[in-house]
Length: 217
Image 1: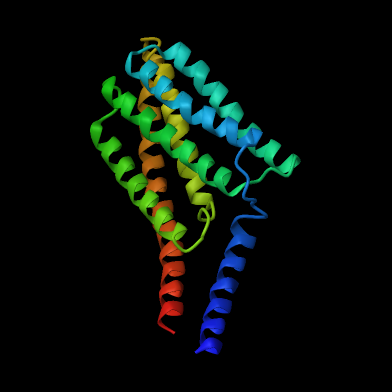
Image 2 (image 1 turned 90 degrees about the vertical axis):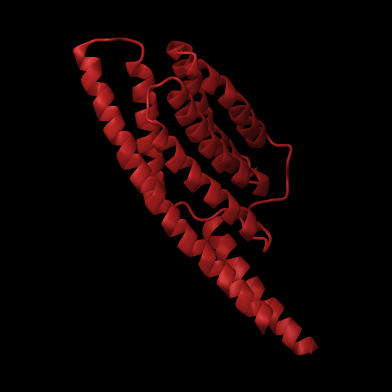
C-alpha cells in the first residue's frame, strides 16, 4: 500500500512540476510585493472606470484606462526584474484583466452603447473560466497557460472598448464609421474570447482527468 501511495504521489508531482515549469516559472509564496500592490490598485480602479463610462464621462475614463494599461505592463516588469513573481500575483493579474473587460462591457451596456447580448456572452465565458481555475486550484495548479488566441481576443475586446468610449465623445460621420468598426472588432473579439475559452477548457479538463486517474490508482 505504501509503495502504491508513493507511486501515485510521484505521478501527481511530475504533472504539477511539468505544469509549473511550463506555465508558472518560479512563482513564490509571497504576498506583500510591489507588483501585487499594483495589481490590487488596478482592481480597485475598475469600478471607478465603469462608473465613469456608465455616466458618459469618457475623457476621464480614458485617462484612468491609460494609467491602468501602463501599470498592467509595469507590474510584470517589476516582478521579473526583482524576483517578485508570486503565486497570488499570477492569479491577481488575469483577474484584473477579466474584471476590467466585463465591468467595462457592462458599463457600455448601461450607457446604451453596446447590445446586452455581448455582455451575457462575455460574462458566461468568464464565469466558466473562473470555476475552472478554482477547480484546478483544488489540485494545486496555477493559472492556465496564456494562449495566443486568448491574447488576441483580449486585445480585440480592449481595442473595441477603448474605441467605443472614444466614439462617445464626439458626433460626426467619421466617428459613426469608427463606432461600427469598433463594434465589428468587439464581435471578433468575443469569438476569439470564446475560442480561447474552449482551448483553456480542454487543457484544464485534461489535467483534471489525469488527477482523477491518479486518485483511482
